Length: 344
Ligand code: TXA
Ligand code: MG
Image (tube, rainbow, N blue to C red; front, side, top):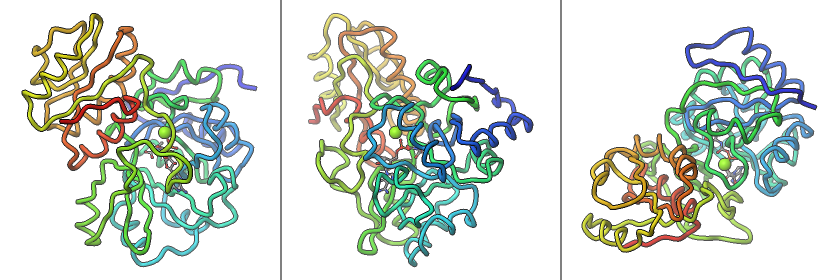
């Protein structure tokens, strides 16, 4: 039973006493929300299946959707998974610590609810200092999905998620707005080819540059069901409460026209800086310069949540080109819009 959720403010630096306490809570089977460089995570001791169950309950997450296990160093990985092959080792060396998750063959020490009964587990080594120090303080690997109630946009700042998790977790560590803003790139090596199951800040080009090959899963931009490479692909995710439409065209004029044709009485538009005054709409949220994908990914989840506060009849989102981190942005936005998507 949690009496009241404590919020520790680490925005201006880590408080060592509070960090130690948070580590102890994790070790003792409690839930702690913490920042990473991608999004906030809701964490528990990855080796404690009861604590892991509590994550699924707090999030309302389907139990066939596995969790990522967070480690603070390479030594910790050894106990959790079978020896990686050469390709996997290269990826580990190149991208960890960082916004990268590698799916590896798990050892029995990982409880089955963490991996949703798969024989693999996602391993991630965050570069964010608070996340790193928390895992070290806990002394155990931390299983952590994104901190959001299932189907909602992932939490990138504490203000957005505090209501969802009030009294459901023991501690929330506030590290300010997360740097990257969208979740890690999830990769599985299949037939010796790194395959991106969820795109992110580490792009196909980044992976190609290191190992010469990389594949995108076929399922990144479409609705899928049944048995998929990554169970998270089939669930509703990132969705605002209001109805949503995503529009993209390489031709700016065309995109503007399609959006204008779809504007209704109370339409809120989330789009680029350059188009801030192009529409006659109820409210415009400016996600950054058109080609500044870093800014867009940094802002997008917070804006999807903010949009709901205006209670619009419709949210229209300007898409971006599916290149670089734009692949990850579009992967999230297509889902946010519930596949209600016009591309010309
Ligand atoms: O950046 C991130 O990865 C954040 C922060 C907190 O680290 N975490 C995160 O976790 O996004 P979550 O649970 O929201 O997303 C994990 C994704 C899901 O789509 C899940 O299906 C997939 O990774 N996944 C996890 N384990 C897997 C496995 N063994 N095989 C295939 N996909 C897996
Ligand atoms: Mg998630």
